[in-house]
Length: 94
Image (tube, rainbow, N blue to C red):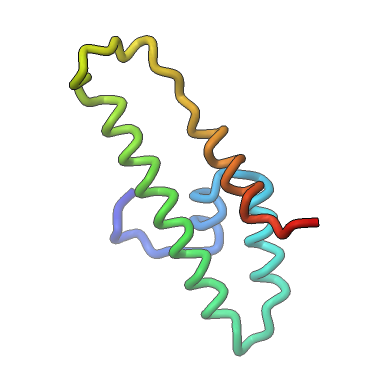
């Protein structure tokens, strides 16, 4: 994703991809007092940027030739599992 496209609430929501993470973001944005809004937005923008960068690195790795002779066709995409696990680990303990 181009760095020249401004970050918006919608763009952050799309970048988060996980419905649970997206819901948490929207809830925090909607519940933030005016004086905290920019800070909340900036924090979630950083999270979205990290997720976009990680996804791009993953795609680049997947597209690169295998260094150890493994057959790329046998690789399993576990991106969704990693995102789900990360979201679960971010949740406060019950």
